[in-house]
Image (cartoon, rainbow, N blue to C red; front, side, top):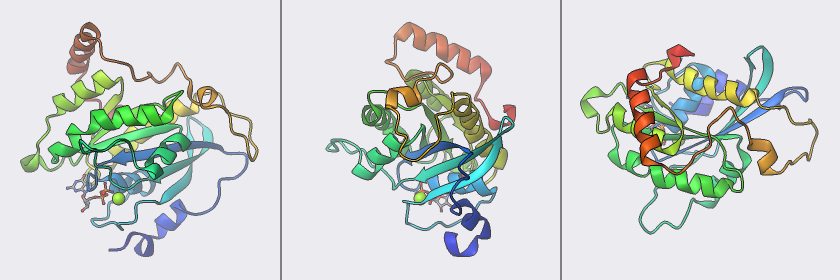
Length: 246
Ligand code: GDP
Ligand code: MG
């Protein structure tokens, strides 16, 4: 099934420009190929899961939603799968541009693909580097949690990695659970919406530091072992955060 042609609600997603009065929240989704980036975006914005998606990964989706009582235009940039090989010097240019454009980045791996998990740390470093001087807030999504028999990465490993990166962590299934996916994105949108709105108008391009600095979303930071242990203990006692708590 072809994404664009068969889904009327996708047309809605990639449709009209946000009304000038709407606050715009921009999110870029990054991860290895096949981890479910497109599936997650489509699920979040349309509630639907389609088994097969177009290879074209450059789509920008947008939709107006209510976030904490405010009308907000959410724009989500899909990106091509990134493979952080040992020889890779950085992110592909189009991903760097998408990171610099975004208010926040969603890093995705699949629990069935160990390689997609193993490259997250490097990917995160590159995202932080691309976003300098003020790195965008990042959340970590582990997708395909429904594929129990194919699982190659434990939830605890994802949780520990997220703690070391200073990110929120969600384990979700784009195919099985809309609420989880919606909750992860929605929570991020709520945090971004709490940041002071920038003045509207074309060409307004605030310095990245002004745009992204917020006390509400923890900045990524270098792991410190004691802090890491404390966070891991906290995280384990709280178990994996799921969207249903939003
Ligand atoms: P992308 O390359 O990261 O954009 O990945 P896609 O969104 O194209 O998904 C790759 C494949 O994984 C497709 O066949 C999807 O149907 C499948 N897929 C995506 N999310 C899930 C999920 O949560 N569970 C299962 N079982 N399959 C999924
Ligand atoms: Mg895709």
